[in-house]
Image (tube, rainbow, N blue to C red):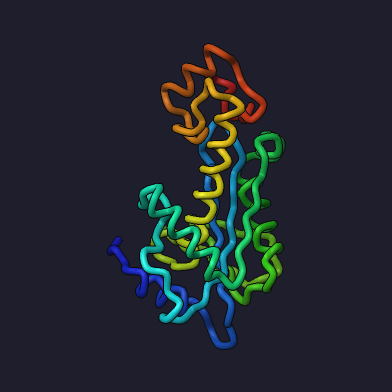
Length: 205
């Protein structure tokens, strides 16, 4: 897949929009894979003109923590609308991670102060929403709006896990963000599970 600059990502989003489409919302999630903590979904509507372009917006996984922090701040400042919704580990255990992700994306979109004319989602995700939607494989790398949503969600979730690290220090959530690192799994085996661990993800540890 060819690397795209930020202008090309914005042009990609515009190309998805038909006549009469003004507000494009990108939606993405962070935290589908961890053993602990919520899945976090963000929905973002950004101005679709070059003058308002935020340089450097990309898939959050490709950016350094410092770069993500700076971009998340700019995105929130410049966004026409921006929401974040977290789905707890308890709900993930009840309805499974795919349904929890769908729920989080839906709620984030419904909470936007301006209803989008078009929703772009990453991957192959169909949502139960009253808006026109389009799924884009590698959307967080190709789409300006989805990339922005991935950054906002990642920064929000990282901050959340750093707070949890203060409550449950033995698991080093500030370092692993709830993912199943060797050190994290060792801590689970030694100390057991804490309240924010996903029971359905840790059955076989």
